[in-house]
Length: 283
Image (cartoon, rainbow, N blue to C red; front, side):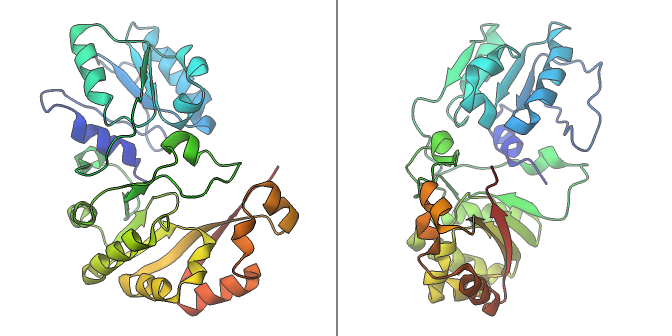
């Protein structure tokens, strides 16, 4: 799918800077690429590949900047393979990185000091042109999660405070994408029910189909499930994690079963005409 981070960073990049974007999953990165700097977004499962890509450019004297979840979790490790490491959200840091690149004074670390306000956050989807992505777009409404399950990296990366874009910005983002299939990428879109219902009412006139990631306590709220159905939700990813109540308690997620057995929650979601993508923690 479209890597949403790059459309966010493209919107923050001054228009006089020429940008080339390559997605290593679907295309070859030219080995002789002539650039002034390279930026890589790194997840833990892509870290070794990212380090390999970085070394190819650093061996040619081209500085490499790394950010993303793995850089935020393991900055010292990542710094061994990059000239600069961006930790945390990039909205407040990317302009500083660009300014330092211009002046030739790139810092070793750029650390998020405060969680950036998401109001006014925009995307520039032109960066996806001529890429072979599926016919759906990714959109973000919120960052963070109200829960604190002990296996999860969301709070460590996004903090314990829920942050929201405006509904108007999200609706505009969806319209500009030109797509009728949308994946709302929030780690748990149910973080604040009042905000979520406001978004659902705004989605209904768009007549799109959309999917999301959500916690199972959505089954407590019939009004919410009906609004999701009316607004075009057809699929939800939910973290079941385990079938054992003891394991759930150990993970700090015993609340996942307070709505009753999983079988009843599944049936209720199916009754509203939506599918479930169930995920589990193993290990």
